[in-house]
Length: 302
Ligand code: CP
Image 1 (cartoon, protein in one colour):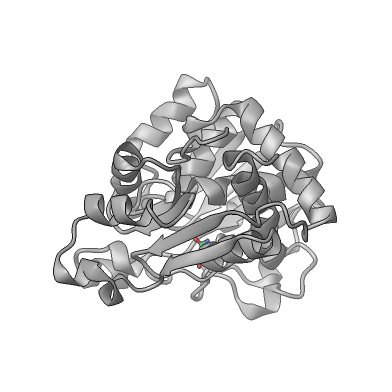
Image 2 (cartoon, helix red, strand yellow):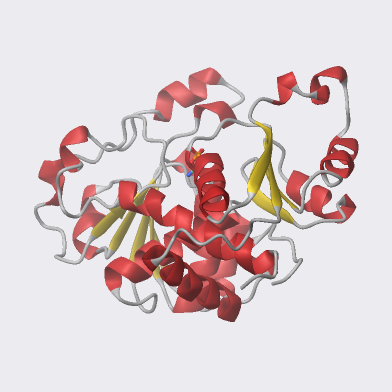
């Protein structure tokens, strides 16, 4: 993985994902190692973030790296009309690796093609969020003891949810059975469904949440993403489509765990948080270890 960008989850092989998860386990046991003291990590966030940016910065800082970057591109020269090309070429003079989130699909691929240093895609529009996928795989393996042969239910905004797209593609390598719960308007894009079919795996589509709960090993809840809708009336129609409440979990399997990439709006009520099946805040913590593994691997120190 040394010096290789991560733009799409398929830029790395299944074997490489697993070795990253194994390395993340080592960082979980010992997260403070000064192995990146001579490195500078740039975090360029053209779109809001709490977990991805802060967990990358926490991961890098705990390994001794320095951070440069911006969290609001309107305070950078982007505001003056600077192109993505020029921003990337400039920041590559000041850092060893760039972590970038951008609202435009394909922007991370473009950045990786012009950049002389590796780019990590921290989310590009509605396209992909591969580092979230790695921490999701880590969380699934940690809670289920395996990644193989699981029933995984995705609920909510499957159309615009970039975390869903990357994770479904990755799970196709693990003989997953997919349960896809969404409003008709927010179904999983056909190219992702085609990927499931190409792998001869089963998927079932639902519009109701209750019927999948007893079948699932993982419930992967997602937010309906208001910012991706062109028409606010269309958002209003679906914004409360699914709300998971604690009382709905009575028939769930013992091993069920609830994941959510977060942020949550109203799709999981607060009373679920105390249920031992709720795993979303630990999931966000796992992001630190997985991102430590990724930075150390790409920078070639592990
Ligand atoms: N999961 C995720 O991408 O969260 P943030 O938008 O807070 O980074």
